[in-house]
Length: 405
Image (tube, rainbow, N blue to C red):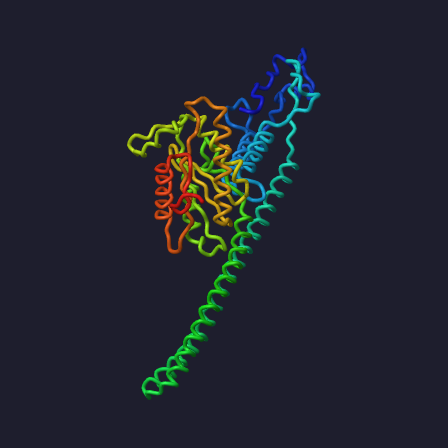
């Protein structure tokens, strides 16, 4: 129990000697010691039941812990909110003694009452709820703007397509009549008109797609940046995201990737350990004979990844026993290749400080998302790129299945 549970002093022992004791002496003798309050329901500590004050403190502490356990990201991460709730629960339930009361009291005197910052708890809870409310309003507003932008783009596309289809249909009707009449000059003019209108329609459609893609890419980037990172599901060894968040991110990018101005990149990194003999080719990978690499090797490679891909939208995860993945958006082919070159150089530099048995060797496959491609197919193409990098001698990478220039 958190309260002082010493029994009230027995009047026969502590009341003043004599046949009669004053009423004040009787009140002091019968008062509980320490900081244990009398229960609101009249329950005494000696009855064996939990006082109402104890139950209330326990309930407040439990509510704070539950609130923190189910917190979500706002401008603070869920883990930070959870830690603050745990701290406040401890401060309220256990209380805080002042410095003057820090020394234990004499045995003959009651213990000092613990201070509980109830007003501070009220401020914390009010500020936290205000942050959550503001975050939800801002997120819903961003999502609503993105959906409306998409709806406007689709609506405009339908209207423009109908107008263009009407023009092409009129020209085709004219061409059909000229063919039926056998008018050669009319056929020539109508055919030329059909070609001109068709080309104008295709150019207009490409321009519209570019314009809409840029606008939607900006909306989606703003919406993504408004959502804080969540550390849930992190891999303990590498500190990167785990497989669950990676699968979720792959599904999201395959759904919206083609709406972005630059389609996203998937980088699969196969990690091996041991200094490679340049005179021997990299052995072909056998899934049934994969041996785990040393923990230190994986940690070094993951740290190099974190130092290479520094943007907020870069996503790195551990996807297998000896495998790491990175997802990149808003990058051209040349920029992605330059980032991989920096990663290989950083890993090579760090590897010179490690024992030969722990020196990392990397085979990397880099692939860009294609239209109408699902996560499974995207991942399969990256795995093929890893194998081709291994066939090329190892410690290298491929982009869309091709050797780097």
